[in-house]
Amino acid sequence: KVEKTSNINSEKNIIILIGNVGSGKTTLINKATGENFKTQKGGFSCTRMFQSAKSRYNNICIVDFPGLNSEDETLKHIQVQKVGLERINYKAICIVARNENRFDPLFKH
Image (tube, rainbow, N blue to C red; front, side, top):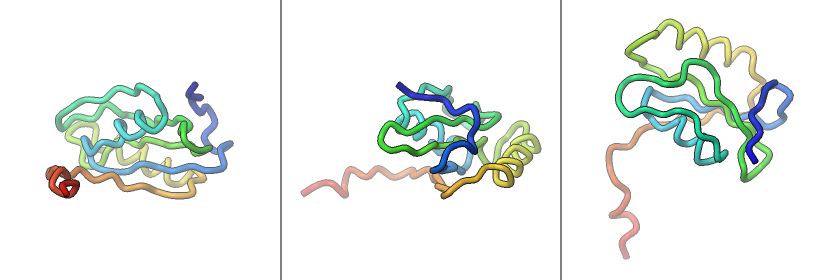
């Protein structure tokens, strides 16, 4: 069962996900934790504040930030990102980048 973290800084291993709106940050946290945070296709962000949950693979807390380059509420997104980077005792930042190319040709024999 996924435990949502209420006090992020009580966790020892914290990874922050940062990337543009629509890059797959929330999808990544959903896959890694078994959580079901809301996602949306297109240039609009669903994530307005931090979302965090523990990974089901290791004792890692993953924090999903609002996306960069938001088309709406840009200043609010930047403020949330700034406060998070200043206050969360993270071990690593994972930059999530959207890839428009498929990887299928890499896996052909």
